Structure formats: structure tokens, C-alpha cells
Length: 84
Ligand SMILES: [Zn+2]
Image 1: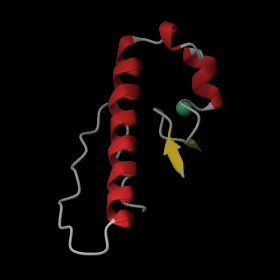
Image 2: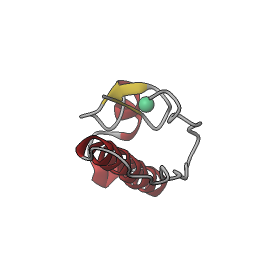
Image 3: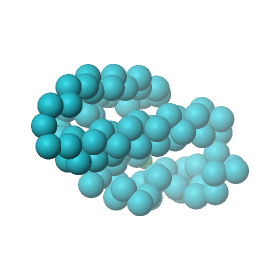
Image 4: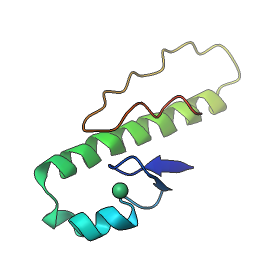
């Protein structure tokens, strides 16, 4: 499972920023600018929702018809949810 850095680069799911963004913003959240903290929070929510959605669709045998949540994107990222 991959995720995207705020700059758009794919990064491992256990990282929050790519190497160059860590150089730029630091690895300590306390030092991040507000917009980055906000972006990370909403992105993390998206990832959690996506993960829960997949669990849901795996756990049931059939018949759950539930609209996939629409994610609002903040910041400079473009749509990245199409490549499942
Ligand atoms: Zn980055």
C-alpha cells in the first residue's frame, strides 16, 4: 500500500513525507506550517476511510451497496484515488 506525499510523490504508507519534504518541513509535526498539519490530518482521514471501506467490502459476503465516500482534496494534490 502506498500513499502520496503532500508534494504528490508516492511514499511508503508508514511515512508521512518524502525525503525532500522532510528536509523542507522537518520530520517533527510540531514544526510544520498549519496548512501542512491540516492537509496531513485530512489526508490521514481519507486513508483511514479508504482502509475501512476495503475492510467492509472484504468482510461481507455480498450485497452491501454503499457509495464510496467522496474525498475532498486540499492543497496542491490532484486526484489519486483512481488507481486502485
Ligand atoms: Zn514530498
